[in-house]
Length: 177
Image (cartoon, rainbow, N blue to C red; front, side, top):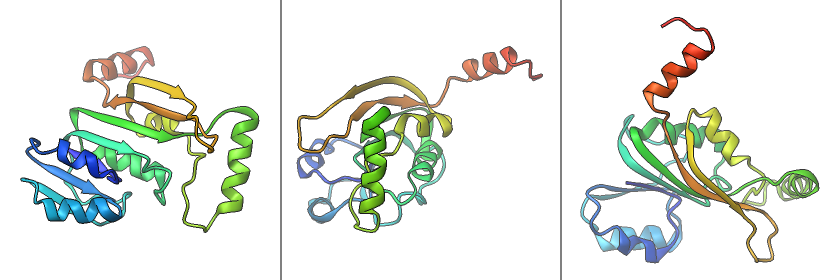
């Protein structure tokens, strides 16, 4: 299991029975606690999220929580997730995303104003990024938190497309095998 952007201390104890736990981009106390807990098979990766050092097809499950808004290159981060995710693996995500219409325009303006502040960028189009990375959404739910921040959240599960699905798409588009 790969947890990208691990920052919730309580989640770490839930991973006790995981054979291999990798924490990429773990922040502050979560990073220190993960190192001190000495969870079996756990390793903390301090590198950039858009250049994960793990081999291709390494993980059955990748957890992505509030990480794309902090990633320097969110599109590349999603592509890296697709690379390290096994063909039958699942990406479980909870992320801020860009709204449509006036709210989306306001998010874009706020992002421009806050550029360079080191804060989260709430205007990434998460689902489109997953699609561009070749991932298929199994489930996605949008909701608006009741917090002071007015940015929608999207939660769900994505995976690589089934090989049969890919063959059928090629056939429908007229490509030869």
